[in-house]
Length: 196
Image (cartoon, rainbow, N blue to C red; front, top):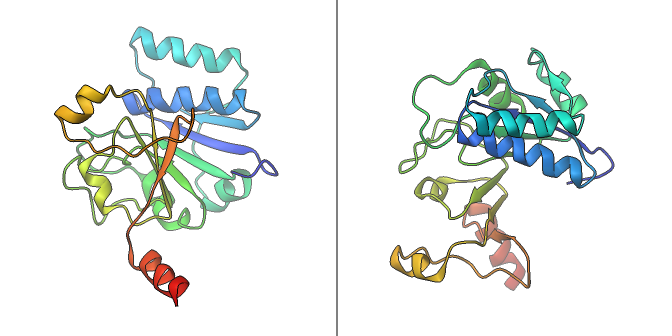
């Protein structure tokens, strides 16, 4: 992520994925970025209230409405973090997603599976450029066709990894995030041309 334009829009929903978004905004702020929250439906649970208060205490701005024009988003933010819908989301996708879908293929979009069905994914759904999986990639990540897939966590005990045959990648040194190689037509073409 470029620090030349450190502005990041973090869109949070009321569930656990929204809580991850609040934590993400806090970390971005602590690492020198300038996050702004869009949190239209706040969770009423104490944990989420505390996470939101932490963001407030760091003076992270809160959008009171979502910009209706996609160019207002792309002109104002370098990245968008999608923490609206988590793995259990069922139902119709709201208008925000249509703005992302039509505009944000140009800019990296982060999210933990973006409301896709955990097993089957969603071929017709949101297609982010970047995916961040937490703990372990879910089955739906096999359908990811973007540029970068990162795994964050590094806290799964070896016994659990072996029990559930997770086959997690090796983290370098003390890194807490690792990039997972993506197999798609573009990378296959690049690999074939690199060897010739």
